[in-house]
Image (tube, rainbow, N blue to C red; front, side, top):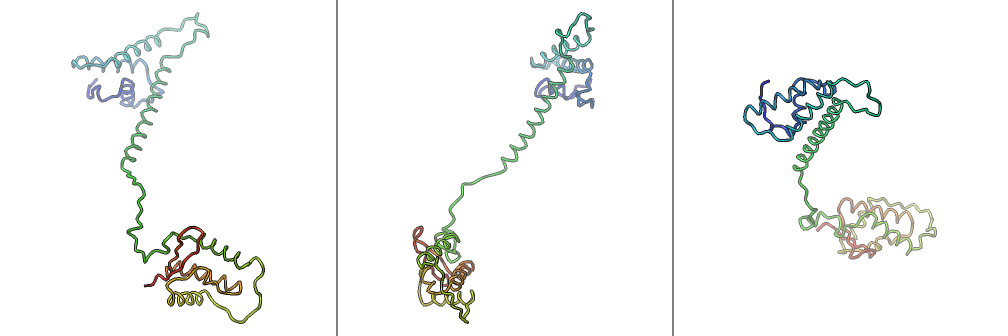
Length: 241
């Protein structure tokens, strides 16, 4: 037997046994207990001949293998009964080797995951508001669509819109684009206006168009929406300086 590896290459006697099995391209379930024991003992003797210290766990495994081999070679007594049943030494060793191999494979996977995770760096979220150009802000106080809808609901209550509005049919129609221009013109003459000031209208369709115009101007960042506190009036300013 050529001794081209040393004990410190292995994590224990089971690791050495797995190496001997793989070296001969043998399936764990097809091992020959007698042959495997001979190879293991030959390796241990080679280490002793080289005056290398052998850990006690390797010697314990050598003793266990010799005992297993002896039991396997002993003929079964005709007086043995089912109550005297003892598991085949070879089957015992196979179970130990399979469990150890599964443990090693899982350890390798966990180690790979640990190495991958070590390459990932996390950072606590930072407030970057001070680095943002205020001209680019849609609104100063993070006003959302929900806030605008709530303001609209309050307007409905104030104007008693639960009752039908005037349904007089007129020939005059106004588009969102026209209403947007009207709002921008108002903001040119005033520094700011209240959300409710823009709803100085009488019909339901005009109210809807006004609301859509405000949303469109906010989306295009033509206006800035601000609110000092929750549920207070929303102030609208032009973003164009």
